[in-house]
Image (cartoon, rainbow, N blue to C red; front, side, top):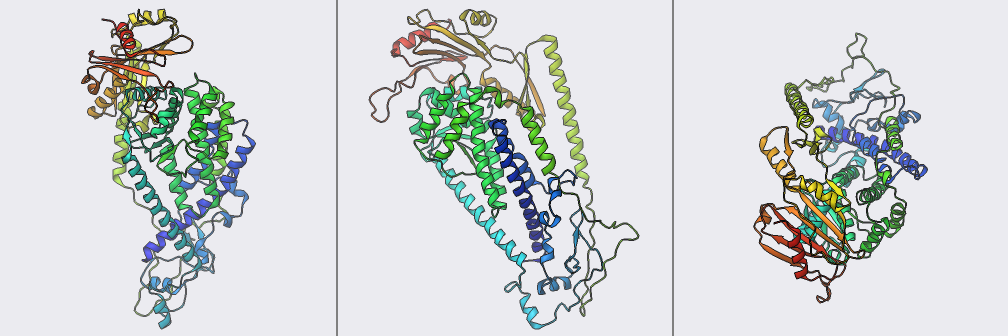
Length: 627
């Protein structure tokens, strides 16, 4: 191992040890707070309590503060000076002779300054022994037979553990990719319609693949650059419509909340800190809290359905598998049977407002961060290197014919291109601010609705789109209200069919912005090359849904904007669900669908779980479309 590599690894190991000790203390504090506040914090905020732990582990440096929790502990308990444990070995002496920068030893007394360089206090001397004091020490200095210190041994054991876990992670990811390749894209119009509807409810505007894979028994959201929702074919067949929507909602909530990316960060942190049992416990608890926070998100978005239906869905899904091991690239609806009881209790007592912003939750996280994300005040008085009283480091004795050099710390030079980047960012910011002001002025002057696409969503708090003016979907409880609004639209609209079966009455209507608008806005925004791109929504092309019920069965009519792939289709497509185990009897729990293609800008569907025939459904669908 080269001296430079050894020094770099030692610095990283020192950072890992210090971070692991502080994070371990923070884990105990978080677990204590969760226990004390379990009846005051909702599932979302209980999960967010783990955020300071992750930040603490990722921080390369933190400011010192008198408020720091770590002021209560001895300095050497938080920041053990690993260099104190290393006596100058034959290898060290050889490095000295070769002109490598060394740490000055003061009988084990050395202190670290704010810029992580060692500053000597007292009478500091390098080893006065001859770098080549004996033939045996020359032999021991070879890389084949190190005279390693205890810290060197610990560092190599840590590095070996990191390598093993990294290789295992790569192996697991290759297996996961094989499982995804073995899956099949879901092509059922009924399932795709449900999937797109659930995406809309959860506000997921990213492109997400929907596949059926028997190699992933649990429903899962996989990947964060190109997300995939994978569900086993068995569950697609056995679950009822509302149960399947709950499952799709759960996985889309993972994608909406970027849980897969969070799981990768947690996994990488755990690889670096594999030796700390408290962090293994923290990861397991954080993943459990993540699932409960996701449950709360589902109940918040799909609040129109009873909570107990979601609880029954989780129980039914877990009948097919018992909580599998966690993988970094996956956010899955998984749990052991011991965790199910806790989740069901949360679902039973869930209140819709508990998922919203909480002043108490925010205050708790801010208070926790203010005392744990700062370092303890230094108790060492540092020497000003620019002062005339600065202590000089005496030169070590030189071996014959050798020139030993001690390098002094230097401040890094400022890179000129960073200033250029700052100017570019300032230019983009002005452009974005001006465009937002322009759109707001247009809304104020002429009304209507506008959407802005952000090329870099980080400048918009992680959101790809912003909306201004009349961009909200409309929901109607009476058919008259729907007709009055539909009359003002320029687009074609569906109507109540005159041949509606006896007993069916209007239950709700919805007029929404079609997903095609977002797809077009995204494509035009990327093509423009601008930081932001705005577009007006004219309400000329809309997505519409009319729902009717007879108290037992439901009949739903849908109007969709036809993209290029649907404009190629023609005629009626009937889908009759059946029990795939017997392949004989229809599955009465899943609605029947008829899709009508080739009608121009729009295509239409009718679905029902009643005993209507295909011909009846087609006639009702025809009657609902204005000529």
